[in-house]
Length: 125
Image (cartoon, helix red, strand yellow):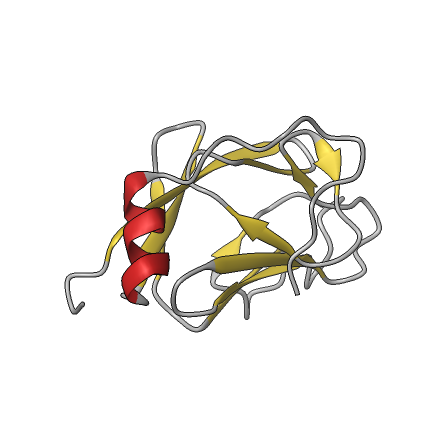
């Protein structure tokens, strides 16, 4: 389920790759880029984020929940969901409470960590 953030300004138009993927149902791939420029490829159907060692992206911050958030690959879109974390997840500066569909360039905040969501056409598509 995707939800528009309440009280937010209208979202930017879909990127060319998202638009093409939605028209042709072509798979897309994505990554999170952190403030240091490190790219975390979202290669699985579900990428888990948190401080626990069993996460795909591990954030070493005591205020990050063990299982903080998950980004789910829906094939032509990606959805981020807060896993009932104590300190929340922000997309474009707004705290989310349900799954939110991500768009290229979206800023994701988990505690003091910031990420930019990047998409590209899948090389297998």
